[in-house]
Image 1 (cartoon, rainbow, N blue to C red):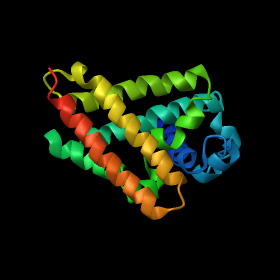
Image 2 (image 1 turned 180 degrees about the vertical axis):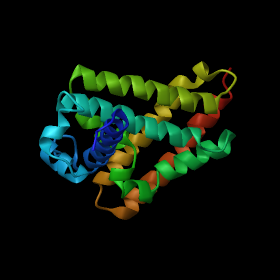
Image 3 (image 1 turned 30 degrees about the vertical axis):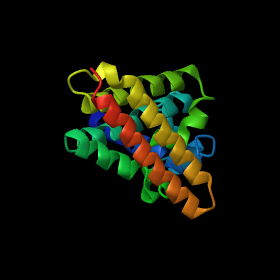
Image 4 (image 1 turned 60 degrees about the vertical axis):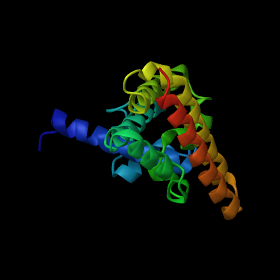
Length: 195
């Protein structure tokens, strides 16, 4: 049976999906090529048919994971209702307790910041597109005016998620999530009224 370009692309997507999930669950440093390829059902040698190095994989996985997050934002209802839905889910116990299926920023920022320029640039470019999409939802008439507030609100959300995941006191962690959701929505409401 002949291995087509379509097959190769499908396999590459499977590797990226698995890498994104495993990186978010176990960390980039905690995920080896052998374990990743085993998760996909392939040999280690097959890895190099798709990626030149682990850094290449990490950069592409970051891009892929942020694209998934962007598509979720783009699928939200328009206006404040969609933003509220995004914030409430993002800052929920369900998201906190399922890092492997959640936001790559909240799960991986500490490792991305220590990675190669290639990985950090991939994050920077994809993050900028994500922030632009949120800013366009917050202030459709002048998204640029709300970019700083949107970035600040998202930083609050990602940082809160990281702290919430680190706490052993579930009551405190849940309260932290609720308070941050209120504060993030307030920031975005203020940004929506900027000209």
